[in-house]
Amino acid sequence: MSSYENPGQRAETQQQQQRQGPEAFLSSEERRQLRRFLGFPEDFPPKFKSWLTDYLSVAFPEIPVTQISGFDKYLYKKGVDLPANPRDGQPYAYVADSSKGIVWRFMYNADSGSQYKWEFIGGAPAQVAASGNVSTTSASWQDLGGPSLTVPLAGDYLVQFGAEFNNNVNGRDTLMAVAAATASITTETTIQMEGVGGRVALARSSIVNAPSPGSTLRCYYRILTQDCTGFWRNRWLLVQPVRVKKA
Image 1 (cartoon, helix red, strand yellow):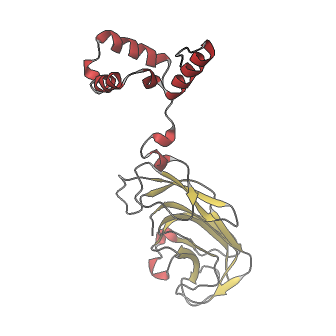
Image 2 (cartoon, helix red, strand yellow):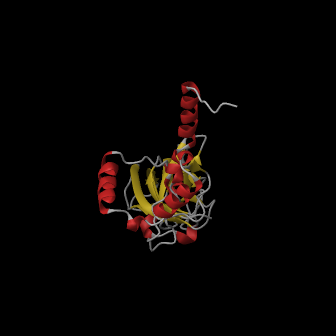
Image 3 (cartoon, one colour):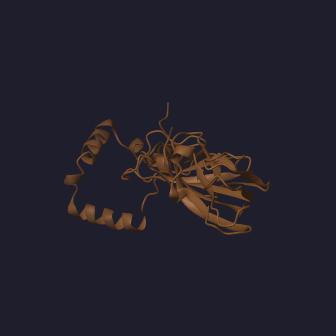
């Protein structure tokens, strides 16, 4: 049988070898020597190293981001559960209320001295309002039907709240506060209308703690002394996180 190979066959063979890679042109011994050579880059000739540096400066190889170990931790992700075992600087978009399109963006701060290491970096606040008039003659904190908001994550929250205050006895004080429970109300989370007759619109912002997932931040009301009636109307509450943690 003739060993003659026509030009067309030779060209096809070369194309097949090119598709298979450079090693298809080498013998087994040559491939073994090449692998050994490439296994010790510190022995490359200085001239080759100089050329390689110049080449890479203008033809830097593109490495798919999916091939970089751990990079997926820093990709944009959205959901209703904070990631387990997060890395410092890792972002996450938490869907706080899908029906209202409220998404809170957090970044994990491993160096934070707080137990709440997911720090808020953006997103719209949750908000609620109640226009009805409420009143009390009690000098202890009362739940008069909110407004209130249940937060999905334990943490510290920035609350903004207010109402129109009134009192039926001039010179008496009327108060409003926000907290997860009456026991945690402080002067920093309280609005106090001091001895003003007539209706006055007041508002305040403060940091309030939600001790557990599903805590309800609620508005509470009272008067200072039990010889009058306090009134509130057009009440409103806005809540957005400051820092939170995974349950």
